Length: 100
Image (cartoon, rainbow, N blue to C red; front, side):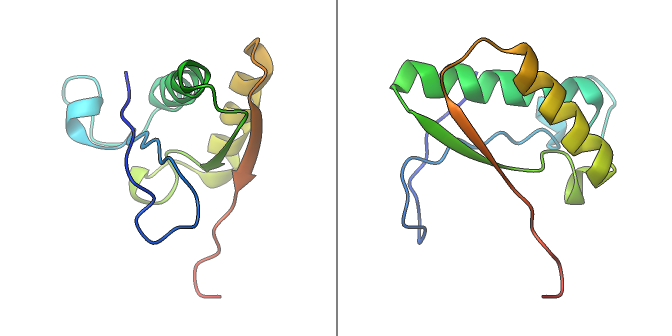
């Protein structure tokens, strides 16, 4: 379902990698993020955060970038998935800007 990593150089712990774009995480033959992989990543990360007793969780836009999914569409899918969950975990979306 998910794993917990160290914070490396980040001033936060723990890190819950979602990895929706790696081939072993996708359906057979699929090499890009999909609506389903984004939704599954969000749900699994929230479930793991609940199990760990976390009160908040920051997310990048899952599936965008290396996943090849449109950033705006990926964000919309994430927001819909968060809204459908019954969770007390507070969510913060982090948008990265390439090139400053």
